[in-house]
View 1 (cartoon, one colour):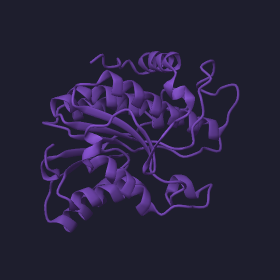
View 2: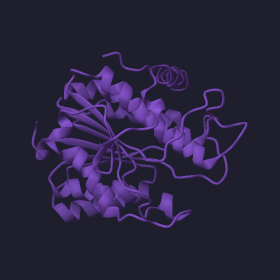
View 3: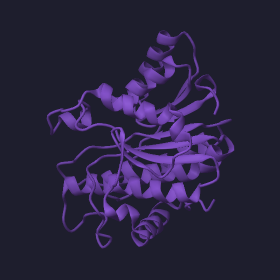
Length: 274
């Protein structure tokens, strides 16, 4: 494995919460960082903070709104041109919504932001990650999981913010299982992590009382990024620091195949075959 000083790490959702704190941790350890967010102002502020804290400039910022599939694909286009990519941290996401909202593409917004963006970036960047191997994909998910009803994935007939969030997070774990199998032998490991419960981030505090310190969640994500064991182990769902079982649908080949097919249809992005 390359040293951290030689590694390029992409963090989505890097301007707030876990992503922002993780960026500061990894910058202090010497990593080259590609940081994503949807606010140009917040991005410039984060870059300035990292430069001031480290005295170097191995950081860049990519602007993309995951409410637009075109912007997700354009981001993947740009990132595919990187010289190397050692770690992809799919961290961007939404919390539980009080009312149903649609993306610019007419899709349920939580499903697109939390799941489809992870699908597109992971699939599109898999060749670059394989070329940079050993490398990793870390999907920041949740212990809150709910199986898909494939007759109404977009929740048009029965809205529940909890269902929307929990099915999207389970989708990330289903994708983790599939990608781990597809990329087996490529040098790319793919693992999913529930970092901590109800951390004091903006996607939590608008509805819930925080229970876990932000530092706990950031530390658990950092472990998945840097610890040698996760360069070898793949296809895991880790609850904080413990390898755990996800919702049974994560291990159902037929359900995963249906989600893959739907994802390919909605995004136009094929699932990697090797």
